[in-house]
Image 1 (cartoon, one colour):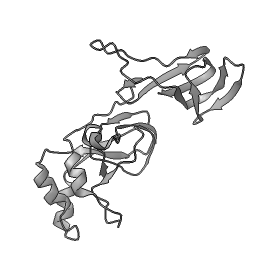
Image 2: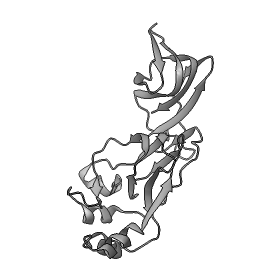
Image 3: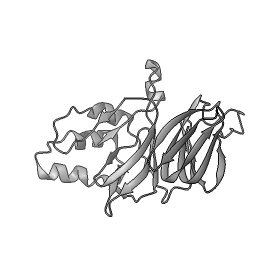
Length: 226
């Protein structure tokens, strides 16, 4: 179980934080994640709980009673802002979109002997309880990335659009040179304005330049990530 810092907490070192999101590609009937805690506690109380001697059953039960278990199904989406305690449990295949950062603080590891970062993790912890979209609404934006689901039944141009902040007039998602496409379901073809074509099928993934005009044809369900 881990937590990631946000940009502001690392601004002095000019290191990006790590906000992420998960789209559920497949899930067993009882699949779930840990996403936040069941109640709000002071950082002092959290430190005491996470530093406890977990060879004692009461200490383990005390911690695990705090963990907010959230069931997920195929097609669900959950946004994990920086500062959220989280862990992926068994029976899930996820597509993860995240900030480009490797900063991870491990808080609890179910008896494995990997390095812990309890003090660092508690210092960036936030009492966030994300609520999954079940199923995914089809569009999501945050300051770091955007996801959009697109259903193709004939021929359609793929465009990456950016929301504009009404106050600043700036793009809500910073413009990038590239975007990615993941094929969720179906088969079809993609065509570029250079004349190239590509056969695509379920779970194919590729990156394209936003300077290119991309058209898709066939029976496809796509996730466009930018």
